[in-house]
Length: 176
Image (cartoon, rainbow, N blue to C red; front, side, top):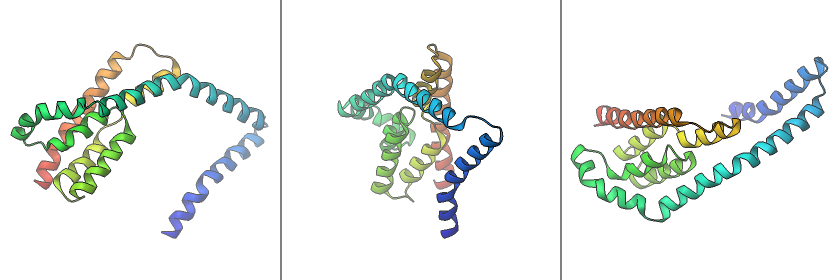
């Protein structure tokens, strides 16, 4: 384990040194390029801030308003009939929006039900089988200024739905 810790501590400084070395060999103005990249990064962060803020506020409103819990309470009979634990639905709904919130929910489910429980295994599988579609679209499309993302959104959310359904089926088949 100590060897891996040493590698992880040195990989980024070595990469930076390698980039600087290659830039110096090619006689590029490394410091000026670094400063220019920093300026572009700051400008991009300010351009993306409204998108990120809107997404974070939306998530907070959804969770704190009780709308998420009301929706889950409404569909619980259907979920029980199909054999899906209702406790997993908040994770399935939040995962396409926020990876951090979904990771927190996964940790909470794992702590509550245990890592070897059906819900714990399903949460972990679902966490790895889906992506943060809305976050990705917000960041990547916002960074390059793309306004129309309807097809990417539809395909991304469809992929998330397939990942959720596949997670449920696979965990049921493997772990019963």
